[in-house]
Amino acid sequence: MLTQTKAKARGLADLPPVASDSLLALIALCDADPRPEKIDVGVGVFRDAVGNTPILKVMKEAEQRLLDTQVTKAYLGSAGDKRFAELLRPILLGHHAGDKRILGLQTPGGCGALRLGFELIATVNPQARVLVGTPTWPNHPPIIRSVRLQQIDYPYYERGQGAIRFEDMITALENGEPGDVALLHGCCHNPTGADLSEEQWREVVRVVSERGLLPLIDIAYQGFGRGLDEDAYGVRLMLDACDEVIIAQSCDKNFSVYRDRVGSLWIKTAAVDSSKTAMAHVHQRAREMWSMPPDHGAAAVHIILDDEELSARWLVELAAMRDRINSVRQRIAAADPRLTFIGRQFGMFSMLPLSKEQVLKLRHDDAIYMADSGRFNVVGLGDDQIDRFTAAVIGALNS
Ligand code: LMR
Image 1 (spheres, rainbow, N blue to C red):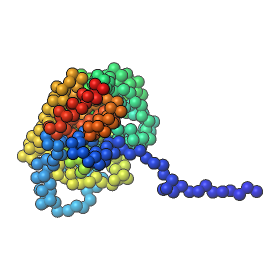
Image 2: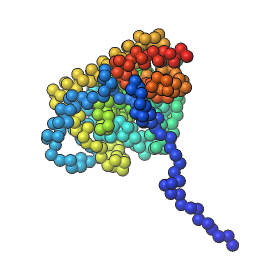
Image 3: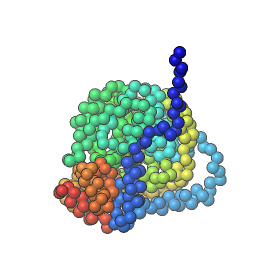
Image 4: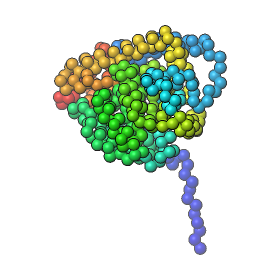
């Protein structure tokens, strides 16, 4: 008689190794480099002319007010700070702010909003495929995988030319099935900086709505490109044309509160009732994952946006960040004809036409830390680092 042997139960020690997140690993690598002249153009944080990521003055003041006036830290619920979301509405939605079919809630950063949006899609339509222009933010694919949706890639960007492969993009969207998801970058494309023009947005919106695709727009850098309204052009146009839209928004960059994790998710459906039902699912998922979002950063943003004077000062500080980004772009672009494309792009990132070997050589020889893909954070450069950076990049391009 055969004796049945029980398979040994797998324990935590049986877990396979996991490749570390490339951008987070780059922070650690750069931190560990003792060379004082090192240049960190890896992870996407704004830096000023002397290389600091300061807390905005208006944010410091709002935080002080919060400290002085907050009387409780009792639970707020899975929607987080409702007034925060209400105050964001006009900034993000513009002329759609009054549309009661669009509902939003606070999330832990834009990443939390993305995860929640994809959770909702996987709940309603697990067969949906997600059409993704590549390259994209390296955390998009893991988030899509985490909800077990299939990802279909199409080429978005021609690195050598610094240009969008717009025809490929349109063909891929035209090949989508109704219900498939079009994941789009609202502005300041990460990692390429190559944003759709208004004319291109109109074409994308036409195809998305005609094909019955579900647009999920990731807008993490509103105000860093051309301006708050200009950067929301695609979001608002999509809302003009489509009954169903999902938007994942972040305040982490435009309020410079990165580690506080401040974002929001917005859902539009064809009717108020169905939006409320969709939102009930979103709340349930949020409850399962983080129960409720962290309060501090959103509470401070709430204080700023609820106060005319503080809001006006935020706009000035935001414009100063945008101006710095664009002026560093112009300086790099002026250094070599092969870099002029950088001056035509928007937001914190551009992607250099360098091989991984060239990127690693810059890291080794020149202590310049950029992502393996050749993505670099334009505004990671202090003013006194720009010339050394461009000289090293030009050297690499010549090699
Ligand atoms: C980046 O792309 O560098 C930022 O969005 C930070 C991150 O979380 O990856």
